[in-house]
Image (cartoon, rainbow, N blue to C red; front, side):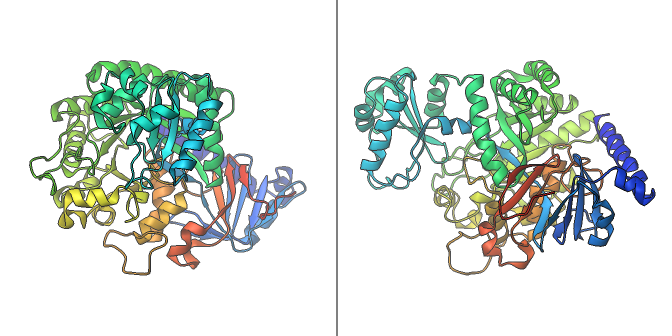
Length: 557
């Protein structure tokens, strides 16, 4: 029913606009367009009209897409006219998997990124300890583990820097942390058993559970800081891939206050130990928090871990650990029950899978839900898909499950790539992140940052998807799983809107759709692929209003 409601809304908007266009010139003048963009390279993501030169925004909707000549009747008194001068316009970017609220707390904590020697790192830690003298814990982010690989830090050093309370400093990707003795003791870990002070996997989770929970005010402040950066990168919509109940409430409060400057779909985090009993609570939370720009109608399930840490579930043993194939975090029968119930209740299901065994198990669960609940419109996805058996890649298209990739992980200079390749061995590593293979078999590709695991900027991800090479690498042959620019852009726009059931209102530049759009300084199709990440966003509109604007773009009535 929700889908038909959106369709009716779009049709109504279209009819109202159509009525205006076919009236006399005086009638058009009575309802002037808010903004008229002329002379652009407008990439619409509408297959019936892929490119246009002009676009008109009236209030919060797109009123016209076509030629400059066709747009001129909308230029009336009070209208804003923006000459694009050949610049590229396209739909706003959707980050289909990120952690904007939880991870953005780092903006309110200790920032250690870029510190490449102990003197600078220690000075920053001391300053942070003083700045947060009233905090129960000292929490920091972006510990530069790569810079200290040959000379790792120790627990004793952190004990000296923070002697009076627990200290927890996460590395760049958030998969490990440097902690002091107070923190280990708080988590029930004997400090004597961990002289290095480094924690990961289960120990990391035990530490997470002990860190004081952020307040609603902190979550909202952190989100605001993240949103400013996201809007500057052209992001108008984000999928929060693991939202706790307090985060859902904080999003809801932000939305009610009119403070959300992008659209948010949150995936409520599923606890596999509780099973289907938690779904009723999730339904209440979903239905009570929906607002103009926020909804929590998705569910997140972690099915396995990470390949480099040997916690991903594989169909065959690890190359460097032949006695292990990893293991599923959720047994197949439990997963099928969870997926069936969530699917029945119309949740968008988002499953973390890295290994090929996890991919197969996730697809099996979706197929079981289809058999049980029928072929009703569903928009489920498997996230990351580092490794997939050839027999399974074709199943994405067959059952319409989206494959969500974070292209920042594709490049050889990603910090985790070396460990991943070693764990798999060269033969399997050659097929890491099989984007092209899934796309060629009819699967829908969606892309994301998984921020803070990779860079937030979608243009970085788009270049990585197209070239599969580091930004500073010498020229060379593209890897076999690279894709073309059209598909990369679609993965960040229309496909990402489709996977959260927003495609009737968003994801392409079409008459009657929401005016969420961006302007780039250059046409991506006319520059070398290796220059995409250097391109800057000049304008980001949300509901027809600028949430980011570069002064180089004219913006006057």
